[in-house]
View (spheres, rainbow, N blue to C red):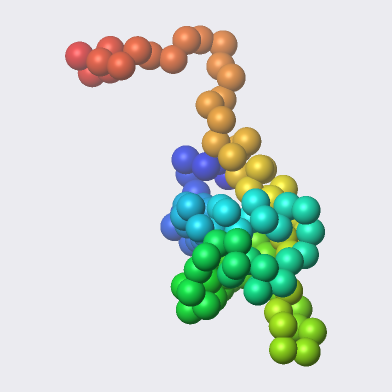
Length: 112
């Protein structure tokens, strides 16, 4: 099934992933996690974010399957989920224009 023929149900996963990555704060969090697991207190300090705001963004990323968390005592630690960014990569690659033997029509040349 190509991207253009997907049903709305087939688009739920890509929509969830791209929504989670469509916010500057969430992209910043992903960038901070590139080097490995980080404590929520470190994320909060670096982002200068209120705990409730940070929790919201972490929940969106976690619900999309982009990050994982673990508790150690009273602290929570977050990391990028294994394979999550590979899935995003594969979705983006699948959206590239198909290579065809003929040139694509120019804008305005259809039906006209």
